[in-house]
Image (cartoon, rainbow, N blue to C red):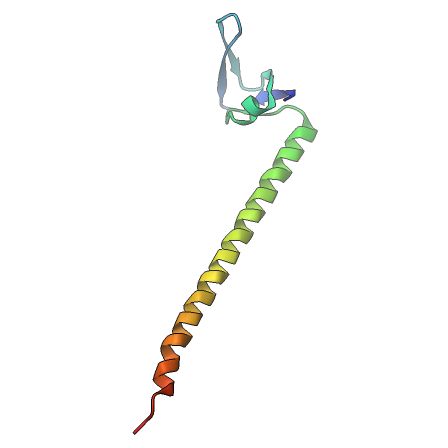
Length: 99
């Protein structure tokens, strides 16, 4: 995976152990270059480049919309199941002969 530039978010510090074993601490606004998977998994960082931030934001919005759609489908299926159960419960009662 490719390396990307990330910026440390406001109010955060980011600690990175370098290849030689030394530890480097980055403060808010500092730029650090990491593998994309490592950078996106760290909540203290966000993409430094505007186009990368826009793409990440769009992906987050799309994921949220998909989750909402799945929830709505699940709710509709649950409602349909409840209505079906209710209809089956009412049907025998209405089919019974009245005296």
